[in-house]
Length: 574
Image (tube, rainbow, N blue to C red; front, side, top):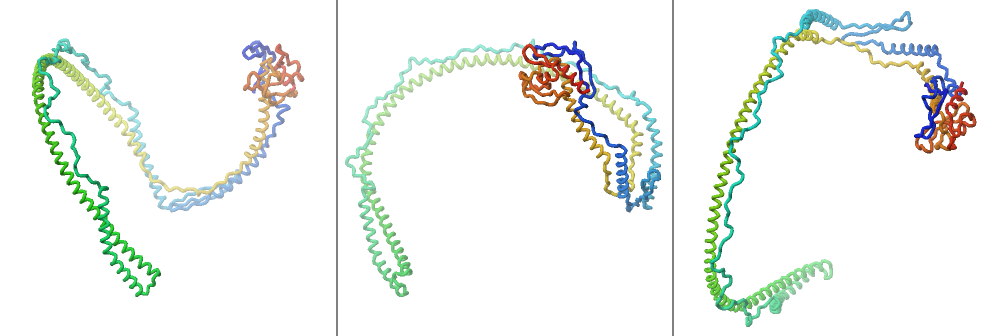
């Protein structure tokens, strides 16, 4: 890799970055493409392998592998169509074993092969004759002079796009309207009567129940109901008591005769069944007494309500007679008022009828005026429709004429296309016949496949030797590239002339190498440019080994002349 070596460096101050940079126009330099870090850093490269030894080892391995593969892949094959055999012989020049292959067909298969060969010869001779026809046909250009010309332009007739409405009547949108009568004159009509003068007895609004028998409720007759209920139950109990005394005595006797002792479980079960039956009879007697008491209560209440209802009905009838008399007087007053109001209503209806007649006359006049305007507009519409129909008819005729012209052009172009297709068919016919003869189906011949034996690949002795040498060279080259990259970066800085290298201006310093004189080479960042990495030396270290390359600037920080640093490094190398 070539690098730039400055023999004369001229620096100028760059205000943008705050340091000196090299003036390329005033400086002198030359390109250097020799070895940079070969001496003192990379060591000697590994010796290459001996090609004669490598080739001899690989040749012997190839021979041994080829002999092994020939032995396992040259077995004889026997099929119903014939056989395939191999015979080995030694090549006098190389000494290698060469295998000759012999294929022998079955007699029937050999006969078929002879027939196929004869057919192929006949097809070949026939196609050779047809090839001349194909050559003659395609040697002549295709004549299209007799075909109709191709038409791409068709004359089109114009269309009517506007209508003449100058002679049509004007369109009427306003019609003179006569006024309508909206108010009625009710002066002179009798007054409307809303109050009635009723002469007659006052209206009875309530019935006086003073002196009527008391109206009994369910609680008022509860005592009578209980007396009736108790009497009915006592009568049933008096009937059931002697019966159940006899039944209990008979049951005890029956159990004793059966040997069931009183107090035993069987005795207690039998007596429990008898007691449940006895309780059931007494419960029915009680239910019947309750029902009988309710019936007696209903009977007594009905008698009381009947007596009170009769007297209440008499008083209600008297009040109704009085109200009927008042209703008759009210009806007479209402009839008188209705007659007066009917007279007023008749007068009002006559006024309404007069107003309606006037409005109907105005409506008829307005309707006539509207019909006249509509008739005028209809006449204009009919004239416009006739003008529109005429324009449409003219445009339809033009469209039909344009379609006819287009169809004629299309028919002419179709005729030309059909003629071209016929010419192409005649031109290609000899070639199609020739190709059909060449592609005639052939009967497949029996094929003999070699046995699918595995092949053993020879060991790549030369590859292994060269691979090992290549790995050693890769390691050596990696070291050389690392040193070359470091030195190349420093050679690039040689063009920067004076550059601030004071260790007080730097941060994140990491040593990545060293110059031949022992001066360290570092990766670092300037404190005023965080995140941007540079490679170079420290002014304080260079000052110890090459003091003429270090300068103290006006701001108190030290700068390095990289051209002097690299010149000294080259002298150390060579």
